[in-house]
Amino acid sequence: MQDLKRNKRKMMNKQMQPMANKVNSEEKYIEEELTEELSRACGGKSKPQHHHEHGCNTNHHHCDCGCTCGCNTKPECEPCEIDTKECIDNNDNCGPECCNPILPQKFSTANSVPYAIEANRIYDTMVFQTFTDAVAPNGEALDFDYDVIEVNGPVPKVGQVNVTIEEICINYSGIVIDTGNTTLEDYDLQPLEPTTGRPCETKFEYAVCGERNATCCQQGKGTNVVYKQRGLSIIVEDLVLELKGKCGCTEIIALAYPSVKGAGGQKRKCGDVEFIFNTLSSPICVPSDGRNVTLRQDYQTNLTVDCIGKAFLKHVDHDGCHEGHYHLCIPNDIDLILCLQCTVSTIINEQLVVLGAPNAIQPRIVDTFNKVCDFKKCGPEVNPLEDKNGHCGCKR
Image (cartoon, rainbow, N blue to C red):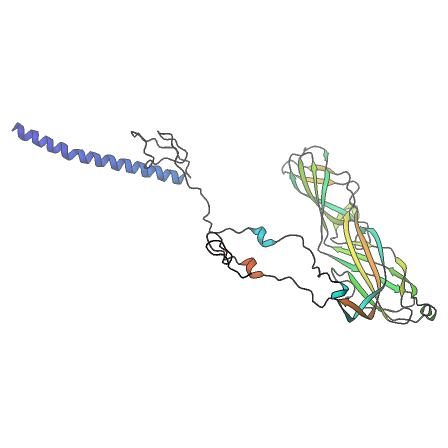
């Protein structure tokens, strides 16, 4: 009977032992699963779980990326980033900012041939260089309305501070030239296309009916006549100035809008500004044999701003309930200047004989396909003209 009880107890122990091992393994598995779920939910910042293990097997432990296990090992984590297939350098597609105009090949009289052509020839030319200040479109004195749009840094809430304007950016949508009234003494002028008033147009031409001057013609000279241009004006549309300055280390950006002062000192924005020039006058030479000529006006403009001296910035509070705003003051205001260069020429049409090269100008080949499409093969580059030994197989 005792032997039977003893055998039964042995059997029970053998059955309980695998059940206990199974329960322990399930608890360990659940604990590991919870640790991984917490780590994912908290973005990898959950508290490290300390596993009481004998030894540290780096192939099977489940620590967070910042924890230190018993063996002081840190598992490597893959970076959290977008899975990018291919990257393209944008600078390669944009190309250089500057360029060189096309230059024909040099040739000498030995390899040139004469050509009979009909072309316009400059008979006489002169240039006017002048500048003037801006006014409002109706001729009133020009003022500016300032709007502080950005203040990066501390500014005292009481009193005003000095601001140094370091950079002025000029923005506008177009420049319109009104040539005014052009005369050439007793000669009749007929405007040719394009007419005055087109945006961005800088070249204007007039047909001039010729008159014969027997005295000058016998001497082989041209006739000297007086050129006059009255009422020349230029309008700059949608002008806005961007002022960038500093007060100590505080950076300030403000916009200056053209305006005029109305009743009570209130400023009214006008948008466009006008530049009115004095009369341009000088003698110019025309043919004395009665040939017709073309009078050409070619304008070049440069918009600039005179030096801005003192400027003050002040914080304006609104009854203490709002953040308030900043007020920029320039005591001497802004002097907007337009520099003008006007080239006036008399042009005649003639049949000429010139020396030239028989080869035409070679234009650049625009290889759009190879520039945009890249079909480089993977691996090292191989020259198809070379054999395995590196010798060139092309014919000499």
